[in-house]
Image 1 (cartoon, one colour):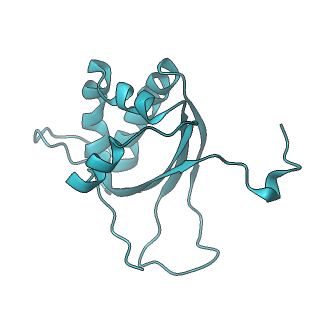
Image 2 (cartoon, rainbow, N blue to C red):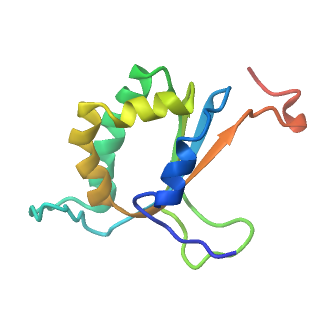
Length: 145
């Protein structure tokens, strides 16, 4: 399995995103890899690390996620790889829930999102976004509510 971090989706991924919407909430698993130093596309100088620049985005996007009916469920630093092998680890993992794919699309089209997205791209060296649905595996039958 080849793993390739990216900052933006491919044309095929964008097309797939617009396919019929999931009928249940979606949970986006974000595996994040940061630049050592923030790299702004407009060339501005910055003393921020990539993690700090992404943090500006993360704080603001959490509010936008709530605005469209979603929530940030988890965020944490990657400490080690327990199983498997990758060339290098991601720096952080975040999971966000959106009530639908359409809600996520609504969020990324907000003017406020465009304003904060510069910090996302400045901070990220790359990431994987994994869309998941349902969340009712049989092993969760006794889950905590």
